[in-house]
Amino acid sequence: MKKKGTTYLVLGLSVLLAVVVVALAWSGRRGSREIVLPEGPADADGGDTGQGSLDVVEITPDTVQTAIATLSRPQAYSQEQTVETLWSGGSGESVSHVSVSGGRTRIDTQLPDESVRHMLFAGGLAAVWYDDDSAWAVLRSGELTPDMAARMLSYEDVVQLPSESIHIADYRELEGARCIYVETGEDAQGYAGRYWVDVDTGLLRMAERTQNGETVYRFTAEAPESGAAEESLFLLPDGGALGQQTLPESQTDAR
Image 1 (tube, one colour):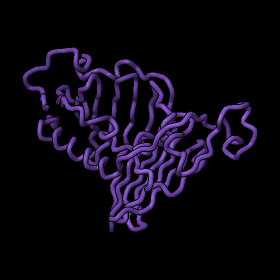
Image 2 (cartoon, one colour):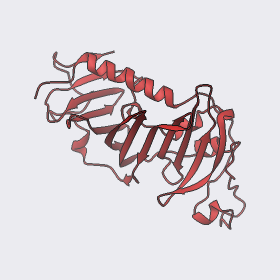
Image 3 (cartoon, one colour):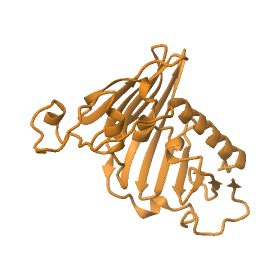
């Protein structure tokens, strides 16, 4: 197969992904206070928590960012994520399998031409290759993150929303998962967002972005599988570890 991982492709990808994520999140955050999230469905309804004197927070627009800030992602998990982009008269969809092990992330995305793009993140580097290619391109850039590559949001994005933009916040169940739900009001361009953050994992299970009431973006994630994936999944096509070898001259080094 013809090599697809060129410098311009990788740079273009990073710019595109950055624009998408920036368009989906805003800046700003609240202060903090010590809270404990509910540990069961009854807790979310205000029942007996069994926590004694612990402070189980009531989720409101005023407390939701503090509550979500207490969450953290698992150190090792795998998850399938789907991103839908919708526009007048059409739509597009991409499905990615994401595997995380400590500071390493592997993202395998099915592309519209039925090829598969592989991206590996480790040690501040990102490697990109396609299908069964033995050649890869490397991008040294702190701006391209695994979240950008998968076009996904995270609990951190909700924490960074402007506090005044949050209109609704409460506990809701989504496909059996106990979630913190956040909804923002429309901004000057008519955009609004909805987020479902899994209380148990700290991972985003679903997000939608609307413009003037019409859905233009939807992110959904399957329940994550805990535990580290096979070590071979976090290696380059030649079996080496990203960042621990001398790259051939044919490899791309974009700063």
